[in-house]
Image 1 (cartoon, rainbow, N blue to C red):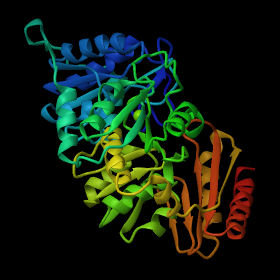
Image 2: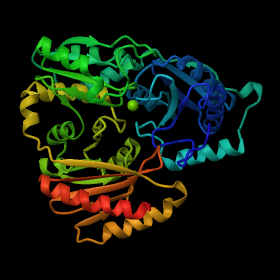
Image 3: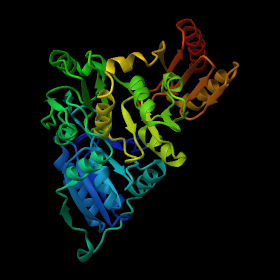
Image 4: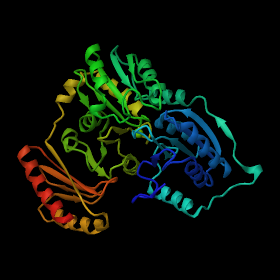
Length: 440
Ligand code: MG
């Protein structure tokens, strides 16, 4: 696969178009690069058409270097992470929310956290040098089948939630592996569950696997017509979860984050730099920001012993159960919250501030210069804090701005948010001018 500016591994593992960028050869090589340092690995896959092909190639690579492969089959990423507790590593074959033609691999530690840049850099070095530790015939690994991964995951989730009064929940599993677990968990909690897009299919016939508002039209109308209490939707591997309230309104990102944090965060929340200030205004606990990417959130939650972590894209981390963003656990916990007070009423209690977004192209070879210029420009006005985690986040008492290079295109993306529109416009104007000047 072509090396991107961030290397083969992005913040959520390897992804590419099947048999073009992401091939069985590459999967086998990754298996060999990883397998040399592991005794036992759990391997799972999402519902993509390429799953069995990549699973075979990857497993061959792992076994050739002496690693025992324990195949969990069609499971969600958090289910595989739960299974990986008993092994040295979990290898999840998934392209998450990417379109159907994509495949990918994510690597998970036994505590559910993803492999960070240090670990994946090491894998990339081994791949580049093709320094694989292949074993002689009598030391290659063999293959085992794990049959109870889903049951064990259900068991763990049920330990962390309470039964609820009878309520109706519509579940949209994106034709992914959540189909094997989310409806069952919610039923066990006492809900009447109605499912859509809950038969696994790599063609994603129901909707694109990214759980954004515009992809959830069917779910919204189902919630309205059934007068359901809520709807929940996952991405392709169910490490993400977003919701629809009892009025049929999309509840994602910053609002859902505040609803979860109000309930589960007493001490400290870890969120990404692109998260709205609504979270800071909704809870009394300390709020820390990290680079964008659930791996970084999970790492900081673990390091700082925070009690909640999240990303506005719909990944929620509840460290009392796991460091893996677990969309099924999140769905169960949201049902618990909704059983106490209508979600539409809870939504109204969360502030929604004006937020403005822009983007400007730049020449990739000028990146270092552009970023230096932006740092100086952002620091040139009176501010409370300038965070240099992932681009620059400039914070004021009444608003903030973020400039960061896109991970996929040669563009600088920027945004501004404030409690009132006039101030958001002012900050946006300032940051737009800075970006324009620096990309020239
Ligand atoms: Mg995902």
